Image 1 (cartoon, one colour):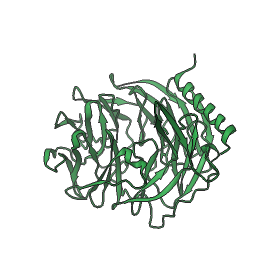
Image 2 (image 1 turned 60 degrees about the horizontal axis):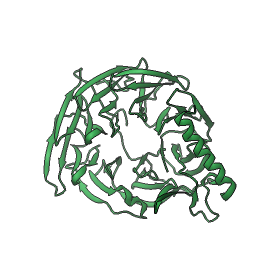
Image 3 (image 1 turned 30 degrees about the vertical axis):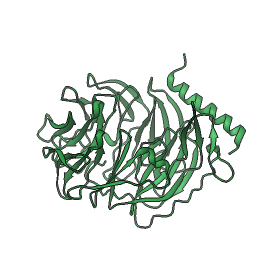
Image 4 (image 1 turned 90 degrees about the vertical axis):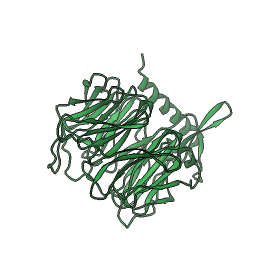
Length: 429
């Protein structure tokens, strides 16, 4: 019997083949400077031939037989857009400096952190309803001229139909209806944090906004305000607050230097780490799962700790468990699978599959050679990205990306790329 992931990839590849014949046409381990780019950012000229985009001669979109997922990855000096099924390079967008990518949540657009703020990148694939049917389209990826001004652009969070941008240097919180990114220049609702800091914000149901509180030197916790701006909940029990993840029933998890802070049922609840210093800074959530996967560090004085345990938080029972992986990992190593399972890329080159309900490793899939996390967080390292039922694993040392079947760990495809990749994400189209 054909596996689900093979069916998904096979369908998309067949669709691409039909189109080719008929049309010819992407944390830090410490606090980071979130500006993703130097002051010499170029205009982002694309050099891709776009043959896989099934576009017309003038670059406009063409209707395609099925959704065409794409990967977007950065390298030193640009952004590559890849076909997520074949790993072919669709476009190579030149952009000087160190670039950061964040999907906005509409399966089409991403934000690129530049010196001026968040710059909108259109990955060039989307779907639209037409009566009783949904039609798919593909076009050239493009780095648009739309920039949402802020100082030191930081986290981008999409949740429940909203997308929120947080500016670390000015505390500016810009909130959009995610669907509005289909417009040329959507207009945000703008709020401000109490003081600028490396933070994060989330728009909750009913127009409420959760955002972290702190200063440039110290971060303490988070608060929630209603649509009128009135504070309805607050906690300062989360030293070093960092990162965000959403779980089932709109539970929001925030990492602390001594555990994790949950916002659930209208109030904050703190879960203590089993160690005096037990830092959770990066998390991977699943809005259909009660569990949150996080990193876990215990050496407060380390320049770079290479932990071998991850945390699993049960947001329903308010418990925090630790899972020993037998190898270290980086902040770009955590993701979730299609059934809510934890997926971690460890430095022995293996994908560890975690059952969050039992907080245990259930499968180990060797993918790449052993590697070591670089001390500088901006440096390229193997990176994990999960989309649907497959995992994408980059190996910048070899300039290769692999597609891994999460059912059984089979490496379904590998492709040599023209650049060593750094950040890796994607859109479903």
